[in-house]
Structure formats: structure tokens, C-alpha cells
Length: 295
Image 1 (cartoon, rainbow, N blue to C red):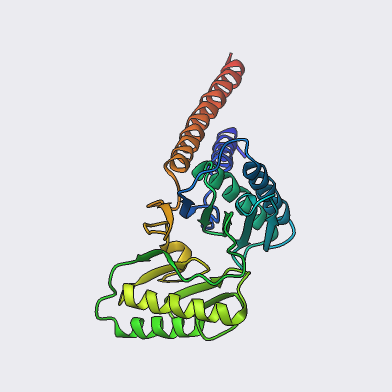
Image 2: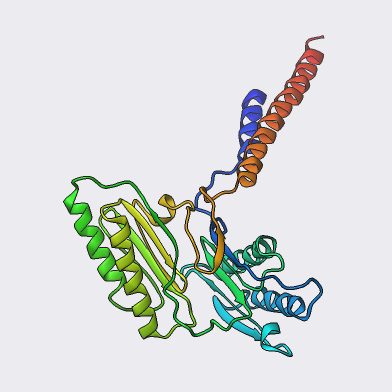
């Protein structure tokens, strides 16, 4: 193969390594977060208990997709309750990474707050000093609806069939599809099967009531969620607004933060500049090599 061809192949391979294409949606992108209004004092007993709790969540996520912990304090105010849960289709490495990212983010988002909750695409983390483990909670946390599907009655019928299937039974994590419509649902692992059914039934009812004929919809209650979209849930959903009863909430309009986008843009720029540098170096080398032979 001529040297010039090797140059082209080398640059293509180099740029591909620096800027790989994203083949899958990110599981650690932000959906919503909320923090209690009440704050604890720095260096308090509760702060120490929360740190122990969050460490336990991250450690447990290396071998289990769901777990909950209670760190007892000398008083009820100092007792910390917490749990994490990964999406039912995540591998253990992805679960571990997602929970670690969630714990890191919730520490920043809810500094010194007695309670906090954070939902990422692939996992959920929550803690509080009020006992919530094993308690069904159907508070609407976040809702988002896509544009109307118009007069596509077939698509609407498929959507209704999908939602009926998601709410008809099974385990805590459910997925389904009907033609172009795909969906998923999941309950938090501390709910019983009957409580899960009740929670998902309420989520589906809220979803249909709020989103009507929308091509996509997401309804997150405090202990379960239901999501659907034409073309796939992960491709359609990229964060959104919402509220949390008793919590101040924040949510992203995009599944990737601005810093993520900036990092990606920087990586692309660096890759292009590096490719140009390689071209210059190889061109200089070839010019010197062939120039030397011609003398």
C-alpha cells in the first residue's frame, strides 16, 4: 500500500478513537432531583449517618440492583433511611456506575438537606430522616408529555394497549411494545406486588389524563413510574420539568447537562486538531523522505 494511503488510514483510525460514536443513550443522564426544605447542621450526627448511608448504597450497588438501609441515630431526627434502585435491564457495572453518579450528584444538589431524591435514566436514589421505606407514595413527582399524535387513531389504540399491558401484572420492572409505541414501567423495590399494581395503576391514569393523545409521555410518582414513546422511550425522553410535594425540585431540559455538551464539543475539537497535527507531521515526513531520495 502506498505511503499516502497509510497516512489516510492512520488519520481516520486516530480520529475514530478520539471521537467514538455514541451507540446507546446514557444511563446516568439527569431526570429530576428534589431536596427537603429542612437542613441539618454541618458536622452533626445526622451528617455522619448520611455519609455512612450513601457509602453503603454505592457499595451495595456493586452486587445488587436494589437495596435499602437504615442508619440508627440516638434520636429519630438523627436516623437516616435510604435506598437505591437500578432500572431492571441494567447490567451490574452500569448499575454500579449509575448509583455512584447519583450519590455524587445528590450530595451536591441537596447539601445539608435532611432528605433528597434523585432520578437518573438508569437509577434512583433517595434518603430522609422520616421513614419512607415500605410506604406507598403516589405523589406526582414529574410529568412530561410530547406533542399530540393528531388523528392517528391506530397509534392511540396501540398506546392504550401498551399501557394496559404495563399495568396488567408482572414484576416490578416491565417493558412492552405495540408497533411503533414502546414503553416501560417500574416500581421501587420496597413496595409489595399489590402496592406496585396500585401505584402503576395511578401512574397510568395520571398519564392518560395529563398527556391525552401525546406521542410520548412520562409519569413519575414517588414510588413508581410509567413511560412510553413512539420510537422508543430512551430516544424520546431527555429530562423535563416537574414538582415534588414537600420538596424543592430541579430538572434538566436535556438528558445531558451543558457541561456534558461542552466536554463532547471539546473532545471533537481536540480530535480534529490532533488529526490535523498528524497530517502535518506525516506530510513533513513524506516530504523529507521522498525529497531525500530525489537528491
